[in-house]
Amino acid sequence: MGSTVVHALDGVDLTVDPGEFVALVGTSGSGKTTLLSLLGCLDRPTSGTYHLDGEAVQDMDPDGLAGIRNRRIGFVFQAFNLLEGLRADENVALPLRYAAVPRSERLGRARQMLERVGLGDRVSHKPMELSGGQRQRVAVARALVTEPALILADEPTGNLDQTSGRAILDLFLALHAEGRTVVMVTHDEHVAAVAGRRVRLEDGRVVADERLT
Image (cartoon, rainbow, N blue to C red; front, side, top):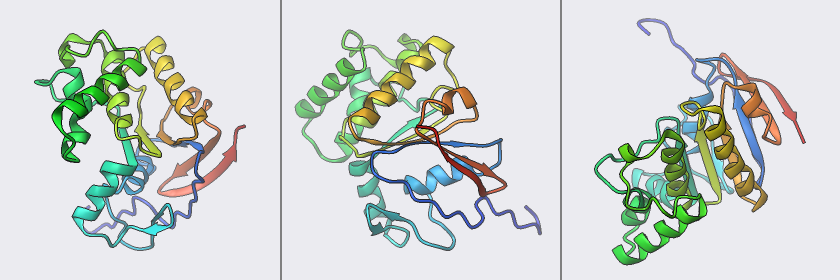
C-alpha cells in the first residue's frame, strides 16, 4: 500500500494431513482467505513452497494449476458463486464441462450430487428460485461432482441462517467421515468447533494450532 509492504502471510509453516478437518480462524485481515487461496492453487506464494499430495505446485504453469483445481480440489464460497442463468444441475455440472465430460453424463452426475445434498427435487430451479441454504447446497454439490479429495470452504455459513448453516456443517462432517480432507475458513468460533483441528492466524502468522478431537 503505497510505500508500505504488507505481508498477507508471513512465514507460515503448515501441514494438513489427508482426511483432516481443519478450521482456519482469525480476525479480518489475518490472512485466512489468502492461505486458502494458496492451498487451492488460486494464488502463488511469492516465496517458499507448497506441496499438494507430495507434488510441488508453486511453479506449475496456469494449465497445470487449472487441471489440479478441476480434478483434485472442490471449492465452496460464502457468496455461492452460482451462474444465475443456469439451472441447479447445470451449475453443478460446470466443472465436468471444463473437463470435457459429455453433456448427458455430466448432467446425470450433477443430478446425483444434488440428490445427495437433498435437492433432488430442485434440479431445474435457477439460483434466484432457491433459498440461501439451498444455493449453498448447490455450491457444495458442485464442489463434489468431480470427486475431489480436498474440499476448501471460505466462510460457507456466513450468509446463512442458523438452521441452514448447521445443515451445511453437517454435510462437511459427512464428507470428513468419508475420508475427505476439509479446510474451512471461518471467523465464527462455534462453526470452527465442529472441525477436528483449529489453526489461528494473526497478522499473517500462525499463532495457535490445536487439536479439538
